[in-house]
Length: 149
Image 1 (cartoon, rainbow, N blue to C red):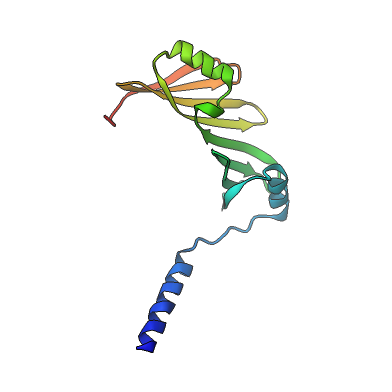
Image 2 (image 1 turned 120 degrees about the vertical axis):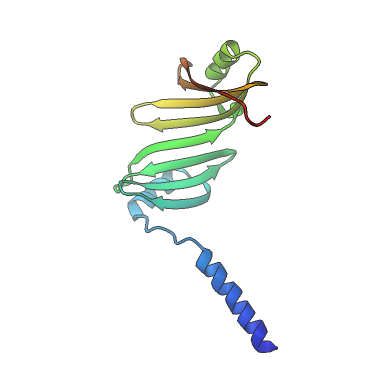
């Protein structure tokens, strides 16, 4: 009986170890730059791609992806959040132009060149995808009939 219990425990331990994803070999330069910039990052996971390393993590109520080159230079951040973190000037313009619609999510992309926002809005019948810059210049890029009703 002891043998069966030991074998079962070993099988469970082996199964858990085998299912754990290996951590990519992120360079010290990248880790140092990341730790200096994102001191309050939580639940950090790393992914290696051909031309960059990416940290996926959470900071407060925001999901973040930060992409670094091999020298530790931050290339781009992508942040996912709700209306309460969106710039007030953009919220104001959205409320004026899309009156009666609810902001359901924001994707912010930031790099050395620019900062862009892709905002999902919805009403009783449709989803709207709107692009904005930091100044609140809005451009509707998609409109879909809601299938979640």
